[in-house]
Amino acid sequence: MLRSTCTTNLKTLGLTNFHTACLQCTEKIHKRFSKKLEDGPQFEDFINNDYTEYEGKLKLEKGENTRLRLPPWLKTEIPMGKNYSKIKSQLRKLNLSTVCEEARCPNIGECWGGGHHGTATATIMLMGDTCTRGCRFCSVKTSRAPPPLNPEEPVNTATAITDWGLDYIVLTSVDRDDLSDGGAEHIAATVKEIKCRSDILVECLVPDFRGNKNSIATIVASNLDVFAHNIETVERLTPFVRDRRANYRQSLDVLKTAKECNQNLITKSSIMLGLGETDDEVEQAMKDLRNAGVDALTLGQYMQPTKRHLKVIEYVTPSKFKSWENIGKQLGFLYTASGPLVRSSYKAGEFFLTNILKNRDHEKKAKTPSEL
Image 1 (cartoon, rainbow, N blue to C red):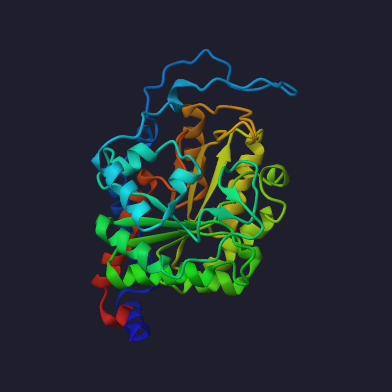
Image 2 (image 1 turned 45 degrees about the vertical axis):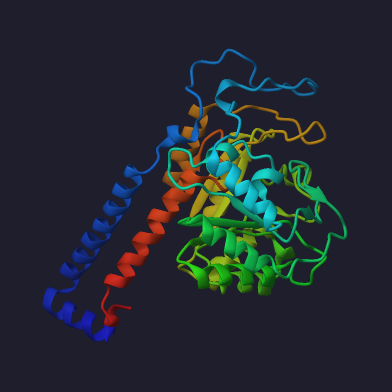
């Protein structure tokens, strides 16, 4: 039916006019996207403090053993409020973990408390609070033999999330190299439980599953909305920052495989800055992600969780983050969230993706059966 409709249009309009009409239609869609993004949070929403010229030291010299002082734009308020207390209480009752707590995210007060973007959010960490890997930037507990999976976790997670009345939720997880599928079936089961109960948009920030394509396909088939996997840092620093079992090229392949499984699925990744990377290395990593078909990118400041973890080599200024956002746009990412306090799961970025996903859904529903 679609082919016959197109043929009729071609005969009526002629090839040139038909091509022009397609371009005009595409331009209208892009304008609608731009309008939605303009109405959403701006770059300043990723910064909790007013930025003024800072005269303190921002970068360690080679061989320097001191620690940099925290610049003013990275200082956040103490978590407070009814929503924060309510969510924390529910998580404890249902025996659920969050990456917000385990990774000591600086945005936990704003996200759990509701902030000025509206609905309170939290990123649920599946498969317990103990990881089989030991990345040098992460404060999550590690063990070669973590406790067994909780079979009730998919239902408990769906129950909690549905009760919060959210529009968008992020599910992440520890690495479970002790499981044959890396926990892919468990994650997929959680997504399916959520989708059975609500219309919540679901993003899964997943491990690399040691590159297992069957595990990646299992996640994609769960009916999630956004597939995320973080490369974390530039290629040169990967062996020093991430666990030895993590690999820069393997992470790119994970993202590429997810897109190959479903071309319409939004894929997403994240880069931490301030670990000693160069501008050329960051730009190359961004290009590598685009070549792997990644649609969305977040860039944020690395912050040392404890004295046992990697030091911050440099505090990147808000203006520098803004320049990376502009480069992301030039490279063709669907959206680039770049700011000192931006994390791979951050509500302003999720707001952007919510708009895009809902817009796609509306366009799909507006099409006639012959156009689908």
